Amino acid sequence: GGGERVWLQGFYYLDRPDLSEQEEPRICYQCPPPANAVEHLQYPQGVWQEYVSPNLMETLGDLRPAYIKRIAIYASGHAYASMATGVELLAQE
Picture 1 (cartoon, rainbow, N blue to C red):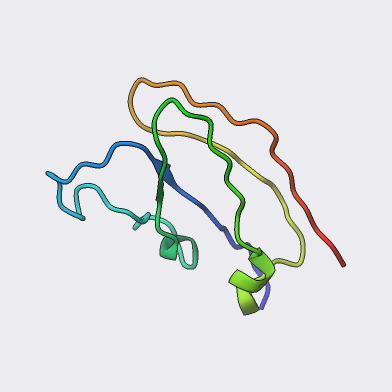
Picture 2: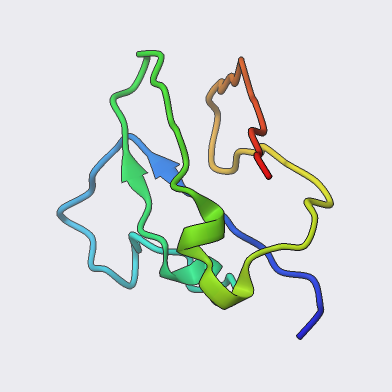
């Protein structure tokens, strides 16, 4: 069926083994499925990293999009600086 769907990928740099999974989750429990099934990826702090998403048409299966409404990049947390560059949306028929 139709309807708006969201796919998210979370990232973090600081691993907190002193915190439980509930205090420092590796997935977003506030996000609706299927976005909440994607585990966050740990990347080193202060180093440019490349990220290539999986093929969303395959990953999302029957939930795949008919069109992309928007792409958003955002950050949350405490005092820090984040940057993104070279964002591309690649598609083929």
